[in-house]
Image (cartoon, rainbow, N blue to C red; front, side, top):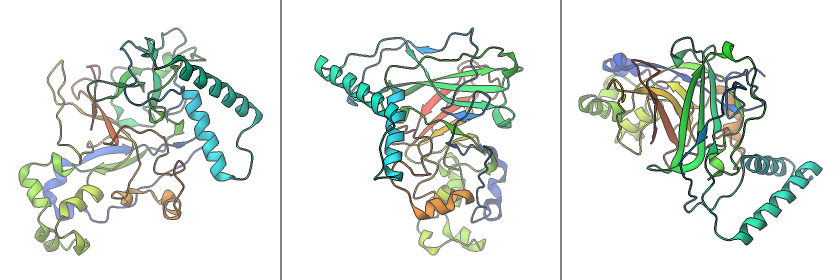
Length: 356
């Protein structure tokens, strides 16, 4: 299925009001993941990977404590629960499960009963197979800048909380798609996840090129004061509601700076924390954003970024669990974003991940 998503023009032309920001413009690609049935040949979130049959599947070697979550479901059980909840909402008076699903749910109930009878959970056995998070082909996402002859980025994570941020630990792989002759048919999956939001829903992508400007936290003190000066907006004749007169910086951050949602490149999202610079452990260069993993495609403060094609669904509203604002079902904590960085000098240098 081929689909597109189109971001509406910004309500104000940034550089018309603040020409000083023009040198800070960065290209970005909004990925616009939407639920679907991707194949190994598709760019996707949570879909199957083009993984060589003769290459070991990556595992996490850390210890895995459940902490206070108490969550004990396998990825397959998470997906089944989502399907059944969506089915009940779409047809509340119809059957909740097919016969096959009913049998699977009975098996799940029996397993859960056994776990409860066994007492408190033990740490998950190591090593834990990683879960696919994203697969991006260079043909679809030209901002990747892969090393050597690679044209494919694969991101996986361990669906358990990890110190120090108590979020999934990620692994990044670059490869040449043409070099994969035989694809691994049945990758291993972890026996359970620490949280349902760590199990991405399979989604196809509709990459869209946009231009981004830095969040006010990424601006110099001088530029930050300039963006927060209401008289500067008035002098430029910017069509901004006067309700923002006391806090024009919020209007800038929510509507004109970095886009919300899953994206490649651009500027990182901030708001709950100050910028935390990351530097390459090999060459000391300041790392640049590679991939933003987001809990939501938009929220109440960033709904101006809702694509034209999703406006009707946004206006109509949807029950929890079917919201177009959360198509991947990923949730990465109260900060709602997880940023992967790459070295601008060489993508072959180790990547870093950062919970914001």
